[in-house]
Image (cartoon, rainbow, N blue to C red; front, side):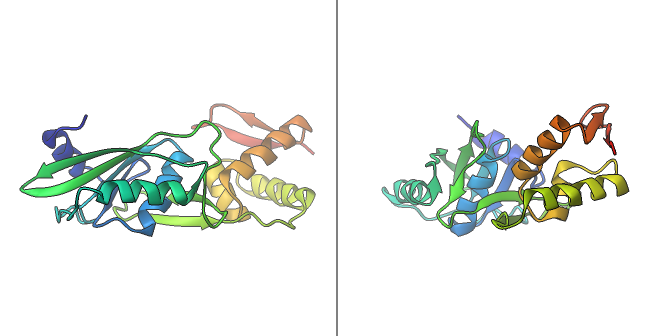
Length: 199
C-alpha cells in the first residue's frame, strides 16, 4: 500500500522507465501499462500532470472498475493493474502499479507491441507503437544488424531496435540466432561490453 507521504516522494521524481504521470485516464494510460508490462513494470499516477501539478481526478463508485475493464478489453493477455485511490492535498489521485509479464508479449487491441521510450534527462515521455514488418526477410534483417554492429560495437539492443525498425524482443531473438550461428559474440557485460562481428 502506498501512503500519501510516499506518493509525494514519487511525485518529486522524474518520469522514467518505471514512472508516468497522467492528468486523466485515457488511451495513453493503456499504452503505458502495456509498455510497463513488456519491460520491468512500473507505476502510473493519474491526476498529476507531466509538470507534476496535482490536478486530481473525479471518480464515482464504478469509475475505477470501468477503467480496469477497459484495460482488460484492450490488452492481450489481459493486464490487471493494482489500483490505489489516495487523497493528496485535498484531491483524489489514482495510482496504478503494473508488474512485468514473464513472456513480455503483451499487446494492445490493435495487435501491436508497445514499448515506452525515453531520452536521458527528459521529463516528458513518449509512448511508441512498434509493428515489426511481417514481410521483412530474417536474413536481410540480420545482415543489416551485422553491418550496424560493425559500425557501432557499443550500440544497445534498444538503439539497435530503433535503427532496425523492429521491437527489442525481435532484436534479442535475432542476436541469439546470430550468436548460435557464430556470426557475433558479446565481449564483456551488458552495460560496459561491446559486440564483435565474426566474418
